[in-house]
Length: 265
Image 1 (cartoon, rainbow, N blue to C red):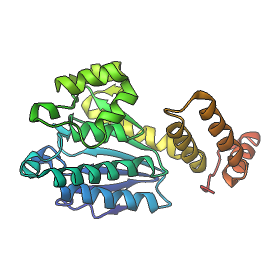
Image 2: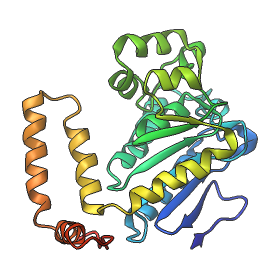
Image 3: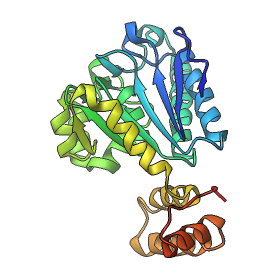
């Protein structure tokens, strides 16, 4: 199924079985995040989140050069303090929806992921990148700081010192450096990016949806709490899954040596 995949749609959607491919579509602006694009992304996230046929999402950018080159500077240049804060809260809220989507979201980074583009990568569950991809938070070169979660999520992912080096220098980094620091999980040739990301998403989509949602939630909730608290959350979620139809189906299928047919219940 394909919904509204017209050329001028700011976020294209193409469904490949249980996987929804969302493509940010402002290629002439390297998919820079302006308010209309953010609003369309929010709508698409609501769509795929509510669609029971979608079990995983791949997020990428149109064109060969840019995943997302950042927020739209031309749009932001004349903001006052209150407008800028409101814009940051809008972006943070939309990116946080990815974490609360209840379905895995994979970033397929095909080019520049700078500023808001890197922050979008950080909001996803994990990222696959083209070997030509570039990463950075260059906001200080414009006299501002990351506003869509970059100061918080990057430090949690690669550590305080590495994050501060990236943020304070505003430097652009290679895909190899992003892989070394754990910002992405795999590098591939540019032409293999979407096939690899979609194959991983398809594989994830065969797993138990209730378990996938629980795993994402427990990892997020245990991210920055004491280990003992995180382990209690894990045990509680593990036990709760034994009330689900998916658990009954998954274990029955294993014992019967057949593929499981999960219903997400």
